Image 1: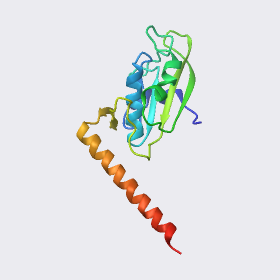
Image 2: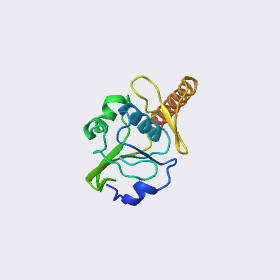
Image 3: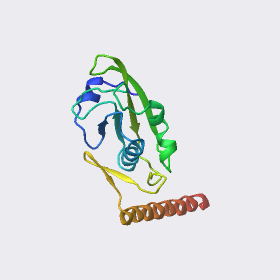
Length: 161
C-alpha cells in the first residue's frame, strides 16, 4: 500500500484525483465519489478531513462508523471497482488520537461503475457530476461496442494458423 503523507491528505489541492470529506457524509454520497473516480482516471477520497485541512476524524459528533463506509462498495455499487482502503492514524483538531479512511480507486476498465439504482458519476476537475441518462446510455453503448469488437478481434486471432 501507498505510504501516505498526512500533510498531503490534509492540504494537497483537491481536484481531479483527490477529494476530502467530513466523516459524516452519507454513505450513498461516498458511493458516488467512488463511482466518479472509477469512471474517470481513478482517485483518492479521504474521509475525516475538512476541505480546509482540519482533521475532524471519526470522533466528530455525527460521524458515520468506519464499518459503514467500508461496506459502501458492496452495499451501493453495482460493479466493483478495484480499490484499496486504508486507516491512517492521526490526531484530530481536539488533540485526540483518531483515524482517517483513505479510499484509493483505480480506473474501471470494464465499462461504467454505477450505483445499484442505476446512476453513474464522473470526476471533472474538483467536481463529482452525475451522468445524465442520455450520456450514460451513450457511454454504455460505446463500451458494449468496444467489447464486441474486442471479442471479434480475439476470436479472429485464435482462428489464424
